[in-house]
Length: 116
Length: 114
Image (cartoon, rainbow over all chains, first blue to last red; front, side, top):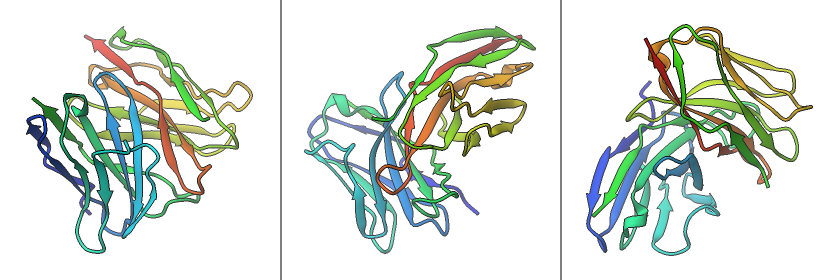
């Protein structure tokens, strides 16, 4: 059973370009979480999605950032018009359900975004 | 709101030394508590967890006990190895929204020397 897949692993963009980060959850998992890790800091929650629904986007900047988790295909975190402050590692996690006792989240290897 | 506070690093130890990384939390209700480990250039791996007060999570020689009275979840290992060098994150599961959202501490970098 493959783990959580993220691609690309490394992404370099110039200021003003768009960044698209992909996350394929583990098989059987329908809940996806995105976290951002700034250099030398812990992970900060950005958004929680279920298939075709955004449940909580309270940690995501209101402008330039969007996320989706379509019925088919991976979850996408999209950053428009990137700025240097967007440089960070972006981690995706998945779980088989959103709540309850079996609430372990499994993390992908992350996408390291560098904005030049 | 819910939060996690970890001791600052880096922590530098010699091989076979005893390790303690302190973690305290603030939360409403009774969250689950976790320790994650991040090796250089990699994602996070769950190291251990505890879901209720007085539970002890353990894995690979690491242990942590959920202490409700002191709101703590300190990570310990009796004898560290060079391969334990990594960043360790304490986290709690915030269920205030009706689902599980992880709140992380800032992380503690551990360096173990031969």
